[in-house]
Length: 245
Ligand code: NAP
Image 1: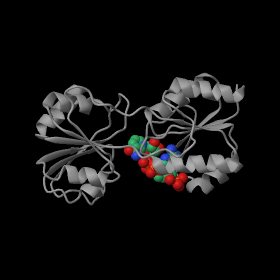
Image 2: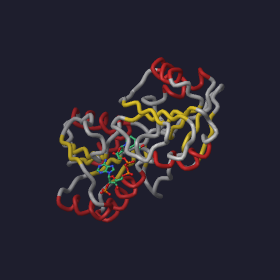
Image 3: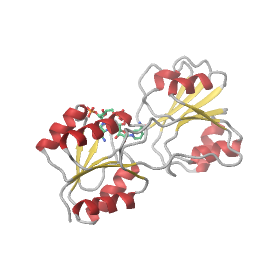
Image 4: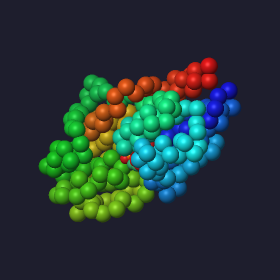
């Protein structure tokens, strides 16, 4: 129905988009950064590893032309999103950003917004037991925390880590019951998360609310100006179809 589509992935949306495009007979190549040792692979062709910035991606596109790019990377993958915007401009390739909406607090939530992981570390420095769910990258910002920390990630985190760290290796999604059990087991008194949005990682927010715990949320980085953005996989499929038209 259309030419080849590059999906910049590493997210649930990226996998669902690749599956939907493959099902619609679109020639898809998904790109993963290669951060996770044993990634869940999307349907269709997959390539793994960085491109070398906007110029590297532009060179890749010159050698491997595609009809369109959908940037379905995580809301905090700001470098890849900036590279995609730059390479799309350099090569004239149509680009769409697929990004799920951020979370909004409801009644009973005690959320404290900050602009960076460094600010999050400041915000939780007075707590006794901190659950860090921000992923392996950026953990160095928390290294000076004096309290106990529970770090949850898919692969083992690299030092520097807070001195009194318990590492929990686990791959989500988690249920609210699992999150409640984790928070109770470690007597957690504050949770730190990025504003990832979506339902896949929201159970910790419900669990924190049930336990009356504060949550420190790191705001998303801004998107490059002028980017066309959609929130759902269905809208992204429609956009890809429109490129063919
Ligand atoms: P980032 O800071 O924006 O990316 C750093 C570099 O990694 C990019 O400049 C690029 O290298 C390479 N890269 C990132 N995503 C890539 C992709 N999909 N395909 C090929 N190369 C990619 O991104 P990040 O925060 O490290 O995230 C890395 C991956 O994990 C992304 O695919 C993202 O969707 C996924 N992820 C991130 C988070 C998070 O919290 N940040 C959470 C869940 C999943 P070059 O400059 O060499 O091209």
